[in-house]
Image (tube, rainbow, N blue to C red; front, side, top):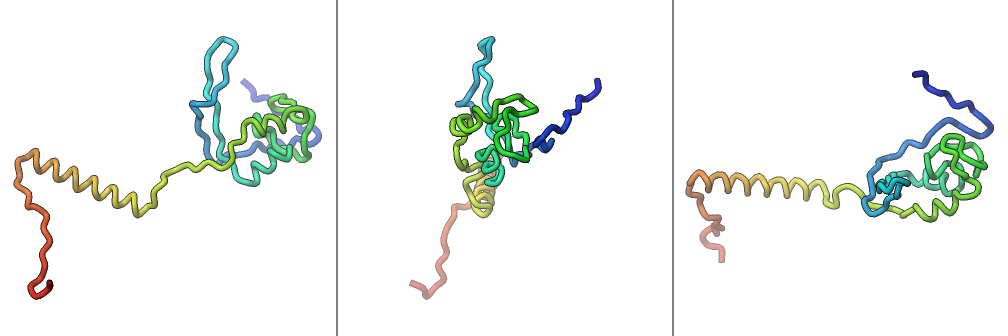
Length: 143
């Protein structure tokens, strides 16, 4: 099957926006005509990319990029950008969302070390080994 090539018309750049990351939002969904619920996608975009969408240079639906703001409709997904882009952006934009771990790398190493020690202790206990109790030794002469 041959790929259909889109012709460059007017301000159409042919450069879709590449997102930093994507995820699905189980709390936001679209109900399809047959009743199925489809989770909506959350896109991780740079400040510049968000600014281009807000200003009408990038389609809010398919992330296709344009040279001029607010064309009548997106040439790729046929979304009526001039008419609905601002309202759709206001409805969907959530601001900055933190993603990834909320701990530092040092904290992650500490957590991993604790888990290794706990697993080793549990394994030794299951094998019936007698483990010394942790103690603090104070050198003589120090009070």
